[in-house]
Length: 95
Image (cartoon, rainbow, N blue to C red; front, top):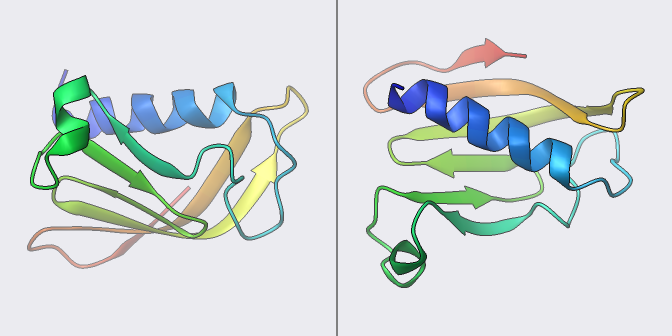
């Protein structure tokens, strides 16, 4: 699986797993923090395997996601939309 597809699967999975109340424009505190593919990545700030989730941002490797809207779906999962920029590319709106 390519890295972009892997990022989407990981972020989607995290949003489904954690079901705090979502405010209109922020990700829940239960998903915010530093996540990693491997335990060793947690102690290496330069690792390509780190996923950093803030209230309005998600960064992974060479991409940054600026979250503008968070919606709780009827099944309890979250849907986030905003802008994404990758190293060397302009920001693009994603949903």
